[in-house]
Amino acid sequence: MTTYAADDLHSEIAYLAHHLHWPLHELLDLEHVRRGRFLRHAKDFDHRSRDRN
Image (cartoon, rainbow, N blue to C red; front, side):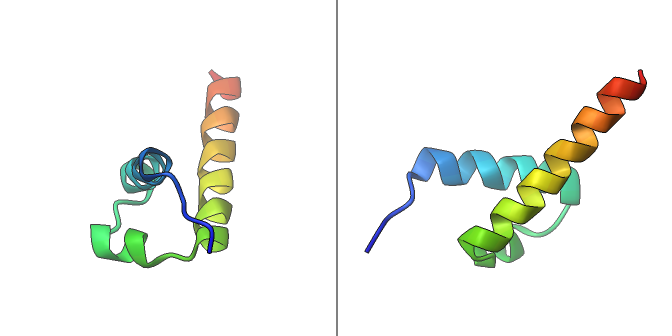
């Protein structure tokens, strides 16, 4: 069984919480792969937003 570093998990959850405004329990319930997809999309939005300014 592979574990996920607690600091990495907290960082991802904080980033998604900032962008999605979802309750903590919903963010923690996301499977790793699905959470990664949301992270990529949120980061893409950030980059596009910065590029426009």
